[in-house]
Image (tube, rainbow over all chains, first blue to last red; front, side):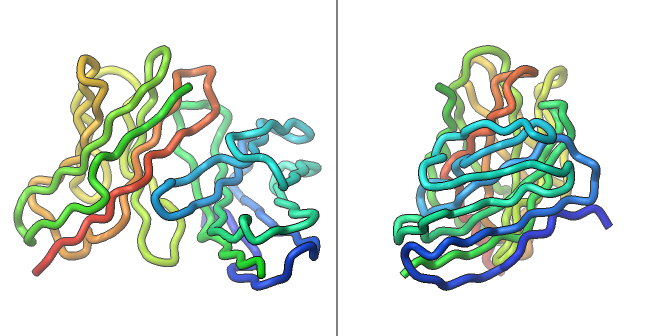
Length: 113
Length: 114
């Protein structure tokens, strides 16, 4: 089954404690992206990757890091989480062609205390 | 900068009645437009897209959308709503073939009452 898998689905942690949210896709997609969803703001893009070792900033990259060492994986790293990063996070993937829709994971709800 | 506006936070309709969810966009170049639906505790699911060609686009679950270039709109429609259509709907835009940034609207919550 074609899918984008995120882990963990839920996480409660404290300010400053480094965390990583993993994302993996099994569709051989070149393009992967991270979004955060906040009430009234829709989804905002954090980072995206066009292919292995190629990443770029989205609209809200501050406080986040990403890496793309393998085609299927695109982890999101919060080096020093802060309460304003409490949000619902989605990973998505698609083929390189920009006319193709993105496939989304089921989301990761992060609470930073 | 590109942007999407969904002017209604909530839309309430009775089952069997027509459903419309509004979307307007701003982008330089020819837009690539998408509608997604989100059910509770799930990721976004693709409904339909407009890339080029016929202004009326048909998608999944009986949904359709009409692209109107002069009004920069891409409203989502369903002729006869079902209770199971109750969900959060997002409109999104890209600025054409060389634009990989996808900008989303704030979302519209649709409630269909039995």
